[in-house]
Amino acid sequence: MTQQSGLASWLQLALTPGLGAAALRTMLREFGLPQTVLQKKRSELAAYLSADTLAALDSPQVRDGVARGLEWATGPGHSLVTLADEAYPRALLEIPDPPALLYAVGRVELLNRPALAIVGSRNASAQGERNAESFAKALSDAGLSIVSGLALGIDAAAHRGGLAGVSSTIAVLGTGIDVLYPRRNADLAREIAARGVLLSEFALGIPPAAQNFPRRNRLISGLARGCLIVEAALASGSLITARAAADQGREVFAIPGSIHSPLSKGCHALIKSGAKLVESAEDILAELGGFRPSGFASTMGKPAETADTGLLQHMGHDPVDVDSLCTRAGMSAEQVSSELLRLELDGRITSLPGGLYQRLEKGERR
Image (cartoon, rainbow, N blue to C red):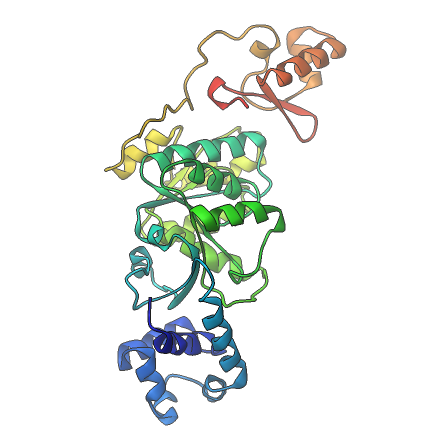
């Protein structure tokens, strides 16, 4: 990584309030490395920075932030990756606004390996989480590191699948890298730090804030060759990631779902807009080219090996309630409830919020 003195200069510029990434890159193009920028007279820098920003450049607040960043970088597995480093992800150089400085914990070599982003709803269905984890493991085994945002639901499932495969996972945070969010994913974050990599462009100590997550999303898509949306409502932040991917020239993939599920609406809207409908990991690998399945057998989209009998044949593949099953099967509520319990214990179905039930394919059973 960059030497200590040079790293302090990168931090000083990156931590100065009011000095945006675009202005920083402009000065780097004009003057060279940050050390050279900071050696310029402040009157020369006035063409690029406001009076308030110039005053903040040498403020105690910035000096304290630099000292804190340098101390953090001495921690085990901690890295500060700048635009001048070989470890800087080359894929981010292709997007319009790459950050000048990245905080990383873990295996920074993953930042320059082929990757695929997988994102989706925080309030995912059990089936959606299984799909995300299964796709992620298959794609990881095929040579693609899995990029996501460490959120609850689909993101967490994607990270678990990436870790289970050979190519691991990259978690891009919407907070400072020393801020654990959400806390429910604490164990997962520690596992990613040990076997994958945590990444953030935000300064140390930055708490979760609504405006930071859309900004974070452009890095999730920017690091990857394509972006898979597993489940998303029409107002989902995952669609922001999908739009960023399309704007960056990345492939966009979406898994279709039930026409009755709100979590399918976003995916269906993407497909109508040109995203590629996928039913298996092989669909993505074929589209990207150069990747092949590596010792995994995808069962998604394949028929069950044996015919379904009893209540299962009346369930279809959409979520269904008990009353509807009573009507379809000609059974009493007690009979249906008893059969549903047996099927759930056998791993043939899963219960959903709102008193709904959904069948599971054989390759998706717990």
